[in-house]
Length: 219
Image (tube, rainbow, N blue to C red; front, side, top):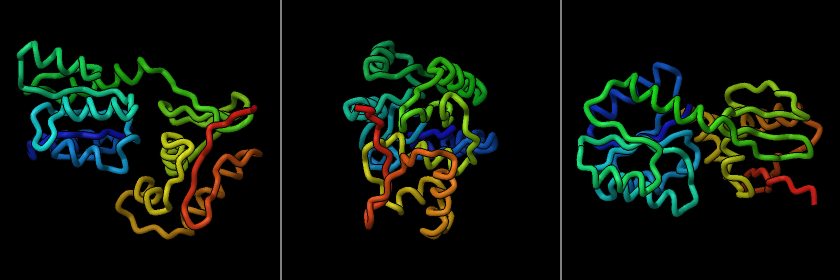
C-alpha cells in the first residue's frame, strides 16, 4: 500500500510513517498542502491521510483541490477538532472517514483497510484482453493473473494511474525505486520483462520523452 500523509506535527508524522513502513507500506510525507499538491506523486497513492490544520493550505482545502483535479483516491482526516461543522466540511470536501487525535495506529490501519476493501477493484483495460487493477495491482490476460514482481507492479501502477500521459524516465525511476540510484538501462530491462509476459505491447516509448500506457480502445 502507498500512503500520502499530510501532517505538520513532526512527532506524529514520524510515528505514523514508522508504523506503516514496518508493515512494508510506503509513506510519502508532506507538511503542508501546497507541497503535496505540487508533488509528482499526487495521483499515485492508495489513500490520503490528511491533518486538517496544516500551514499554507489546510487539509480540507487540499482535499477540495484534489477532487477538482479529478483525483478520487480515498481520504481520511486526522483531527483534534470535535466541532461538527468541521466534520461536515470534511465530508463535504470528499473524505471517506475521519479519526480524532489522539488515536491508536491500529485503529487507523483498520479504517484504511475497511475503506480499501470496500473499493474491491478498479480494472483499466490496456490491451485486447489485458486489464490492470489499480486497487489490487494485478495484471490479467484473458482473465488469468500474470505474476509480477513488486517493481513491475509499481511501474504498471504508475503508468496506468497516469494513463494517456507520457511520464519521463526520471519520474518513473523516482517512483519505482524511490531514493535508489538506478540507470536508464535498469528501467529498460524492467519494461522488457513486462513486455515478455504479454503478446500485446501496451507500454509505448516516446523517444527522448519517456513512456506511457494508452487506454485501450478497440474501436
